[in-house]
Image 1 (cartoon, rainbow, N blue to C red):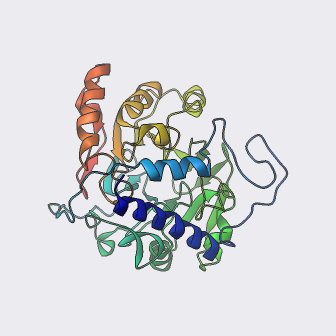
Image 2: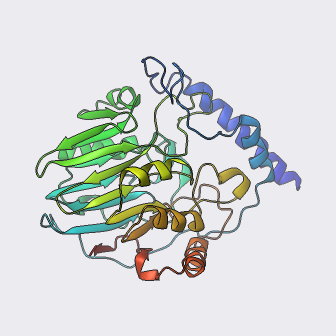
Length: 348
């Protein structure tokens, strides 16, 4: 290991420590009796998480590859204002941010328009491309789905702008209301795993479902809020938004409760180094297995090529790895899309 890399790793560890001290009171402790995934202080899943020592080892051994400094994506048409009840349209914006339009509702997942994913507006993980849809080109947003509180999924500056402009209902896991209320963000509905919330029009039902991941906005505040994904059931669609997750037993539990999906939205990026990421992020092979297990008519990949979080695979590696996995399992490429940033498609 070079001396410069050694200094970089030491700097990263010290930065994590000082951010942790600065934000030592951030995040709300959820007050409730223990459950099968809450010990009275912290949430947990069926499968083990990493230790702080694992994180240090990962940083120490990290071998990154070069990413472009900036990418200019081709412009795409603005999203439509709404779609008819029987229609379903998905637009990929960036990272885990997608616009789902169905049942006269516009649903936005894990929205982030900030230049950095991090604790400050001027520091954190920088983006390498603009969001595929300009903020001012968004249609009216009715519902926002938050999968968990990591900075690249819970971006408070973006949420404050969305709340001010659209007054949407925000669905999130247990413990998240404290973080959002501290920023004067209202209309928050907290959900436990398998808890449901129904909205009009159309009596569309949202169910917060388990995921294999973690939460925390500093290293010493981990798992004090609940993470997960969402199943959306409308008049003509059943949709699964996985959020940020690894492959795990929970997917079998979802498959047992729901016999099929019209659309699944699955993460396919940030999956190396595999020994560390395998219990945090799916790789494309995992995502294709999930597509099969959930009996998905159509899937779309997300969570790639936006922020230089830990580039241990090339910026487009997910595309080749997804093509390899689809060929391996005999699935047509038309059944699992990688959309361009800002590109939208109707789902049959």
